[in-house]
Amino acid sequence: MKTDAAFTRQIRPQKTYRQIDLRTRGRSHGSITRLVSPGDIGELIKPFVFLDYFEGDPASAPKFGFHPHSGIATLTLILSGQVSYKETTGREGIIDTDGVEWMRASSGVWHTGGVVGKERIKGFQLWVAMPPELELAEPQSQYLGASDFHLAGPARVIAGEYGGVRSMVESPIGITYLDVRLKAGERWRFQPPKGHEVAWIASHQGS
Image (tube, rainbow, N blue to C red; front, side, top):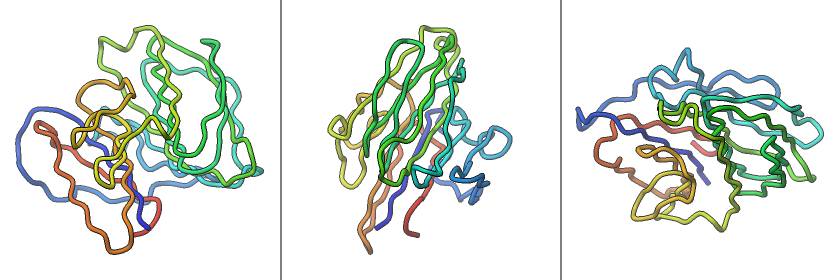
């Protein structure tokens, strides 16, 4: 089994092929591994500025009190387990396995959350810088279940559009986020949309 998250962004078209620029295993702190930061890979793949991979047992998972966000959006993909959420917009609930949280903080929102249930937690949290017209907009959030997402081959379309499938996540135009799951020995080729010239992969299982 191999599972990847693939991301692209849209900027001016230039080359039709490129070599891999950088590989990293990130920096781990407890159950969280920071794979992307603004001072390293984030400089190469803007508007994607942070990517955290988290994995652990519920008893050892970090607990986050209320904290603020502004000017950015976070997209949290739960690969296994359950997490709770609560925000100052009045929304609260539980995200189950294969569910997604999209929270566009924009002008500002406070939120909190943590691991619930007994299943081991695993997932990614991506931070996306907003375009100027959305930096100070009203906050917006979506909490979507596994059934809200559809496949284009082995790729589940988490954000953007791919293979004729469009995500319900209301992310800015021009980015693609795919959750790709391959069986042992299976091959898959990603063809970026026209105008995209940055592609990157975060693998959490397999090789």
